[in-house]
Every structure is written in C-alpha cells, then in structure tokens.
Amino acid sequence: MANNRLKLTQTNVQRLIREHDGAKKVRHWDTEVPKLFLAITPNGSAAYKLQIVKPDGSKTDAKLIAANDGSPEIARALAMKELGR
Image 1: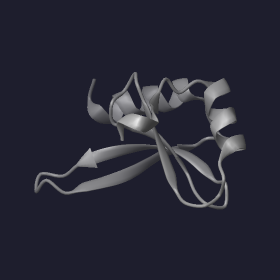
Image 2 (image 1 turned 60 degrees about the horizontal axis):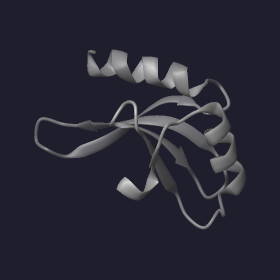
Image 3 (image 1 turned 90 degrees about the vertical axis):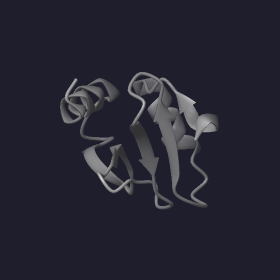
Image 4 (image 1 turned 60 degrees about the vertical axis):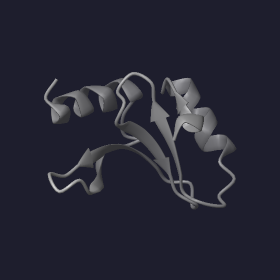
C-alpha cells in the first residue's frame, strides 16, 4: 500500500490512468485522506473509493465517484463526509 501513496490531483490521476498497463487492478492511495484511493481496473475504468473497516474487522470498499465524473477534491469531500470528519 505505501508504494502507491501520492497526493491525488487531477494531473496525477490522468497520468496514472494513461500509464496503467492493464495487467491487473491497482490502487493508488491518497496522502490527504488515508482511506481514500483511486482504483483502476484492467479495462481502464477508474473510480475513487473508500476503504471501510467493519465492526468485525473485515474490510470493504465503497465507491464514491467515477474518476471521469468528478475531481479528486470532490472525492475527498465525499470521503470526509463518509468518515464523519
């Protein structure tokens, strides 16, 4: 996880999507909101997601917004709202 941590900006997101090799699903974690990440699938679809830890300790991902439908700033605001900050 730490290797894929950077500030998600519109420029960085566009670059990450463009440079994605399509071999596998990848996650790029935001440095501003710790549980927020950009997920890019093998077919090139990208979405901002939030990792949620359930009361039993298991983890799940909640889609916030597709990358082409909103900016990293919008995704951060949605994540902060979900996290109750």
